[in-house]
Length: 110
Picture 1 (tube, rainbow, N blue to C red):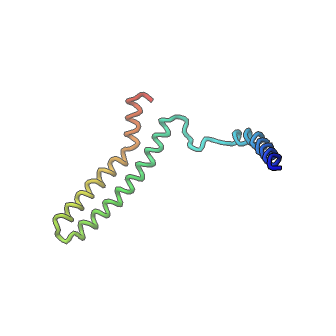
Picture 2: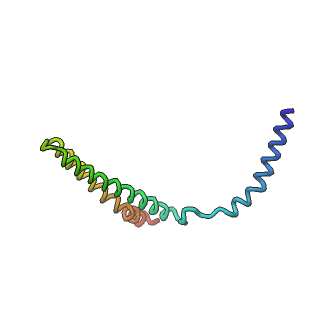
């Protein structure tokens, strides 16, 4: 009895997949709106760059809070300055992410 059930399930699934395959393939559009790998990398780099720049802005605010709450402690002032420097470097890299990818594409000839 289980062999018959298994065979019936196999037939049903095979027929569903056979019918649904061409219908699904005919309606799928390109969700990325890019046609080349280089354009995809540029879109990803731009998105990640915006994220990094946003986090860098938050880190500038945090480093300012660290500096204001340092109470004159040289160690905490140095920690705040280091956080500020890293935040500025992160923002610079984040904002230039698209340019970095475009430069690499030009170098390798993609």
